[in-house]
Length: 446
Image (cartoon, rainbow, N blue to C red; front, side, top):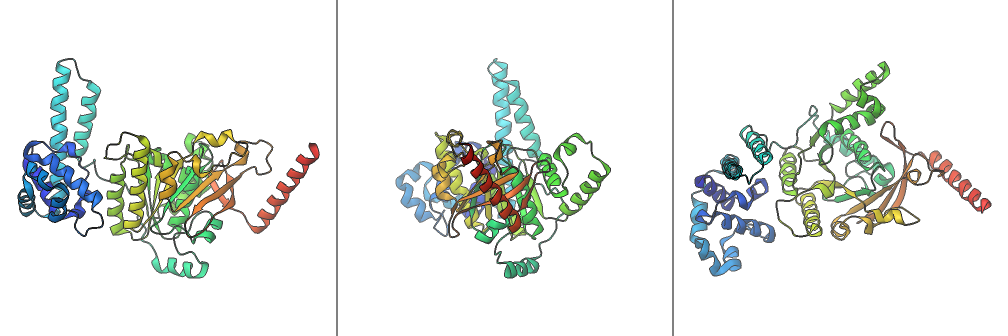
């Protein structure tokens, strides 16, 4: 075991607590020898529970919390020794990588022993070998991949737009909600929920288009779809190309022309996509923090909330989701970004006559509801009612809007190309008249 690397990591953390945000190690990566595992556990606890302190690893705070128990792991003097002997913080990434590689190699040895005694699984060995290869080639923590060329933001342009239109944040795809909220606001956690197949992920594609067109940077953590599928959906929406044609490759000359124009538009935007399988909320924090240093105006999209994992252990899923939503709110507030998380909606809403989602329909809704600043539900009446006058219309139900209020708004959804379109005043009037006529017809038929 690489005790030197473990000491270096622990010492660097004690010297610079902010490095804990960049640390992807868990207590299991440290050995019991020299009490390194317990020391790391102490630091994890201190970082989480002493957030208000300027230095969560202050020796007085740690001594007051653990008292005589610290003697079991070397006492305050051992902590001080680790801190004073720590290498320069610039080498932190190297040392934590060395610790993780050491752990994976030890796991491989143990799995090999288990297989030798017919107690192991070859698939586990293969998975560890892949992990080790990724580590050795820098693939484990490479973070979000910038799939298109970077376009620097135009802050003066954005500022002038805001002063004219009243949009103080990043412009959303839904113009009515823009007018209600002033756009996506830094420091906010937004939750956008809907039942499957309603169009919530596709709306996010449109929203990313609107946000990046406004000069902001967007990063999407796609925990469900591969980055390629995300890009194809975005090209479909921006280019107005039927998604089926992109999937099959059977595109006309006009389609290819639209495709080329869409690619030109997209490559001029500042957009990152990360499809890391099993991404943890801690991983997301580290990557957003790194991006935030380069891009001050950034919107973070997560598809979707219930797929996020954590490096912490919880016995109940509700506790895990509660921890994750609090961390997401912490990311938005502490890093001064807007986090837009797509959320699953439970089946109970489909048991009601009115199938529009409500706050209580959010899975593990208690924590999500309390931590979110904005909660928006998407609802399509034509998904449930074949004779609806609202064919091709998606309702946006702002169920919670801290400081902005609530309301229901509508957009047209061109499903074959995945594009959402704002309704003009004339469109809204015609739709209202159509709904009124439909209701009158229903009354006459009773």
